[in-house]
Length: 290
Image 1 (tube, rainbow, N blue to C red):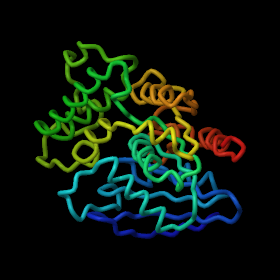
Image 2 (image 1 turned 30 degrees about the horizontal axis):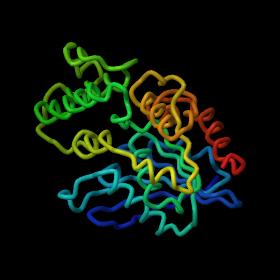
Image 3 (image 1 turned 120 degrees about the vertical axis):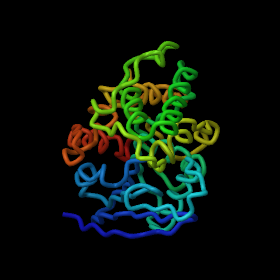
Image 4 (image 1 turned 30 degrees about the vertical axis):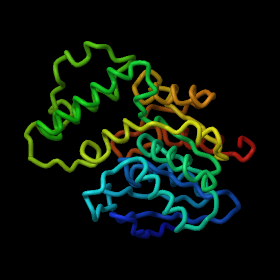
């Protein structure tokens, strides 16, 4: 068993909370990052790497992470700066990074700016809409979800979000003509509570999906970048975005078990296959692959 120690790091406009599971040995530390998912979403995956030090964290405004200045917009550049400051604070030298969804977007920006901090980045299904062949339709649906959130609150917007991320194939011009999904069918509230501070829909939705990678910087980076996708989500939006990103980087996506949440354990209520996922990730992080 590795000991877990929790720390807090003050960054401009926020406090980050991070957990360090220290382990002996020469393997590079592994940072596991999500957004808006916090450290709790990676508990099982982190436990499967007991032969190396593992760091997980709660991004600003997520989980235990707080925003002390809510006037500062949450952007991939800001999250990347937070990650940079975290790695400086840890002072562990270059690390390996597994980052999923919005966390993968933020980690790509980190590598663009500070490649020396990361030996290998495994970027799992970053939802970068501009890379998709159906970009215009995807952006229209993205904007409709944002407008629904502002107009009607969390339940109706989250129902549309869930329907979008699970949709198979390219989005057509008639997608928005379909009847809106019923929030109750997803166990979501149907009444608007008046709040507009959801960590996904309010803080990160537009900036994360609207991210534009700096492909020149990524091409020059010393970091070994592995774009990952789920075997069961290749036709879904995030899986398609991963394939498009890999193509722009001149590689092919590495397919991992499961879908967008293939790494998740049973404690999340949406269990993937974390043991099989960790086996593939461990292989990808072998020094011989770099």
